[in-house]
Each structure stands twice: as C-alpha cells, then as structure tokens.
Image 1 (spheres, rainbow, N blue to C red):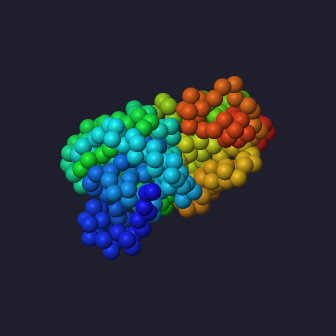
Image 2: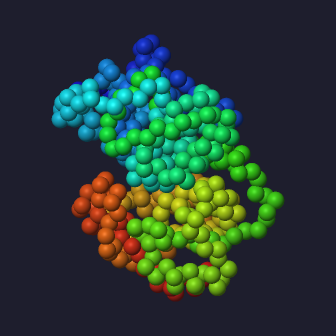
Image 3: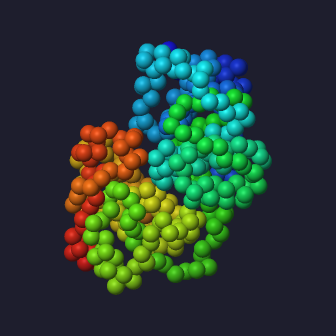
Length: 345
C-alpha cells in the first residue's frame, strides 16, 4: 500500500527533507515546496508517488474536496505495481501540468501560479497535451518576461515516471490569487492611464454548456445599453485580462472566463447568469465566483436562468464525467434567460 507522509514526517526525516526544495517569493511572502527526484504521477491528479511508495497528500491535493482515496486501495496498488515498469519516462523536467479537460479556471488557479517559483533559467516544462494554444502562449510570455527558456513536453491520459525531475505543490486559492495579481500586473502594466470603465457582456458561444440559447437577444438588449460584447475565444488571455481590469460592470453566464474577475478593480459589479444548482456536488461550483468576488471586494449577484437540455455532450465531458452527472446536473446543460431580468442594467 502507498504510505501517506505528512509535513511533520518530512521535517523529521533528513532524506525526505532533502527531497524538497523551498522556493520563496519574498515580495509577497509566498513559498512553495517542490519535490525533486524520481517519482510517478498521472496526468489527471498530478499526485506524485515516490519510488518508495510514499505520497504527500497535504502538498499535492489540488482542491480541498479533491478525493485521493482511490490511490490507497488494494486494487490501485496492484495495478500500479503491475504497470509501473512500462510507464513512459521523462528526465530532468519540471512537471507543471495542466487540466486534462483544458478548463481555464483550473489552469489559471491550480496550475499556473506554481510557475512563478521556478528558479532555473532553462527547463523542459511538462503540461497536458489538451492545453490550449492561448494558454501555452501565456506561459511563454510569463517565462520570457522572467528570462526562462522553456521547451514544452506533453502528456496524454496516463501514468508516467519522472526521473531527476521537479513537481511543485498545489497552492490554496487565496495564495494563487495573490501570486497571479502580483506578476500579471507587472506583465500587463498599469491601466490607470486609461480611466475609461467598460461595461462588458461575456459570451459563451463556443461553449458546450451554460450557453444562453437566446444569446442574440441578450446581445441586442445589452448593446443598446452600451455594453462591449466579449467573446474570449477572439482574444489572447493577456488582452482578456486587460479588459477585465478596466471593467466597472461584467455580465456573464457561469463559466471559466469569470476567473478573470480577479483582475477587476475593487467595487466592480459582477452579474453571473447561472441556472439553479440542485445537486450537493454542485455547491462548490455554484459558489465559486461569489467567493472570489467576496475575497476581491467585488459586488457579485446571481441572475437566475432556466436550464435547457443540450443536444450533445462534449467529447471531453463524456470522457471524464460520469453519465449520471451529465444527465442530471444543470452544470452540463444550456440556459435561457428571461430578458426582463436585464431591465435594470
């Protein structure tokens, strides 16, 4: 069976302690522990397992509610030992990782902030093959800004072995936000010279889920009131961030593009068009942007919309999400908004 190692165990074992690097961002009082050595990891959880069958739950759990229990079953351990000699090997690499479904929220908050703890000036950076070209471009811009020469290597859906490689711990949401704000503002510069404040409607026309089926009516309504219509697919991520930083009001269907509200100025109004979430597993999803808004000092409100079944599910959703959840969850449906709910905007 795999053996859970906690922080006290690490501190009390010289060999384990020497397996971790400590990277610090003194300007914002942030630190990150980075495991360095030989380990195994999959491209979904990015949960490292040492050659001695040791794991580190406290450091490598992406989210508090992310269950890792299956790693500690007899079935997993048997399969793992039967197959690990055949895993593809990467050497001398930095396993940043990325969301296997290319979810922007996950890539922005769970994976990207860890890149700022890289101390090397040249490295092989490993991400999932599904990572969008836009996000790769953002990573390249960040590394170029920090004078880091990177080469990408890509994972598919599998387990891998990493030799003489590094994997950084996962950080909590508040620390991730602090890190992103500190560095991204350095990259985009100061927008205070442009005092214009935008009213933005964020579209989801290229999305499978929570896309308003009456989007054209919503656009017509909001355009007449001076709203900029933003399709994130048509903008690089840095340009999206710049627009959000200039907004005084944002209206958007529930979706990952709302992660960019962390770059809004304090007091910005955020109106999230969302269906009613009825399932217990939807609670974190339904509160995600409300919690960020509260932390950021933004004014957040929900505009409730009705759910509409989708004609077909996305290939990635069918691959990673259970059929029961796809069928019952309003998160995996589209929406329709009654236009009179926009009367006060």
